[in-house]
Image 1 (spheres, rainbow, N blue to C red):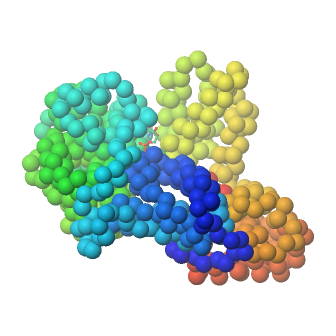
Image 2 (cartoon, rainbow, N blue to C red):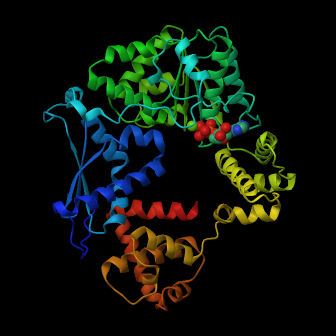
Amino acid sequence: MVAEDNQNMPSSGTAADSALTNEQWDRVRGRLRAEFGNAAYKSWLQPISLTGVSSGRVSLHVPTRFMREWVMSRYADRIRALWRGEDASISSIHIAISSAGRPAGPRDEIKPPPSEALSGQTIETSPASAPGPIAEADQVQGSEPAFISSLDLRFSFKNFVVGKSNEFAHAAARRVAEATKLTFNPLFIYGGVGLGKTHLMHAIAWHIRSQDPSRRVIYLSAEKFMYQFIRALRFQNTMAFKEQFRSVDVLMIDDVQFIGGKNSTQEEFFHTFNALIDRNRQVVITCDRSPSDLDGMEERLRSRLGWGLVADIHPTDYELRLGILQSKAEQLEGVEVPLRVLEFLAHKITSSVRELEGALNRVVAHATLIGREVTLETTQEILQDVLRAHNRRITIEEIQKRVAAHFNIRLGDMHSARRARNVARPRQVAMYLAKQLTSRSLPEIGRKFGGRDHTTVMHGVKRVEQLRETDAAFAEDIDLLRRMLES
Ligand code: ADP
Ligand code: MG
């Protein structure tokens, strides 16, 4: 992940710069939070501290070896790319373990941390968490609130619209929720992002709780499960951790793909899972892929996950999308959304239900704010960016803007004659993306870059292709830019 790219700017590193680097770190963290979401941020990114920056190297530290591995494999490249946006001289990220004693073996991560090292790591419920009733329900069941992620009131069976693509998963979820005896165990629901997996899980939990408040239901994301487990290791109270989970009636783990990778969490999950199944307790799992496609998951765990009922959710079709929009529109107060607009959205936004909802919300929010009616025209206007992405018509200007912002150079440098590496490279990246994402010819692209010759464009494209081959971090940077442009 280390990419050496000798830029001409000097690196920061003196004490006088530390205020600046702290500010940069704050901004990088802000972006990470926006990109990876609150849960991942709290579990993995917030505990990272900045040691300093010197000679193009950012030094960070985390409390455990496990966290270090996790952060290295999932987030380090992104941290580096973002940091480079702040300071172009950054070439590498170094992550150390900050425990009191130097870790010598893999189990060192369980050493108690220095006294205050844990501050700011408490699990909090998300902003979407339901107030009153659920907190009460938690208490009634006497369970440890820290283990329970918030349940979202909107995610009930009543609000779930059934169509061809999700009817099987829906029926299975209902059966599990209503069953008085165990039917299938575990219930494994899988499907792409934003198709309603979390919704169904919450719906099961709600239903079970409303039927019988004495049943202990634990719902949490796989990431939270891991985080809690690591915490337990560090506080040396793994017994309590195990008991918490093993004494529940229903355990729901969302997005189990996060437990991939051979490590102690997977092992612990396996034991917990087995213990519950053996005691005839219901387990519900969701995942973004089928059990057999879970790479990095131990074979025995993988096969056991598929023992019960495996139900998949397919991408939505037009009818379901329209149905969902109609149901959401009915719940809106004081805003009338014409059927034409709903049809238009169902037709245009095909990626996920989450995006569909987002589009409707935007249109409605806009109308409410400026006090105008929702019409097809305003909808098209408000959703310009979303629709453009769905039409996949990307312009060279957009590419230039995005790339300039990403590498922190002026837009004018896309057209200028300057040949310094720190502007020439981003310019080549923009040419490369223009070639990839638009149907323009090389001479046309050259003209848009300050009237350059088509051979210059060709050279730029080739150079980026070569770099992509040899520098994984660079390749990821380019892919990210591409995704941002396409989405
Ligand atoms: P996933 O967990 O599969 O990524 P979510 O369950 O978070 O997706 O769903 C994303 C959004 O779409 C949520 O707001 C959810 O309520 C909504 N949604 C998904 N499927 C449906 C459906 N069939 N009916 C109503 N809303 C849905
Ligand atoms: Mg989900």
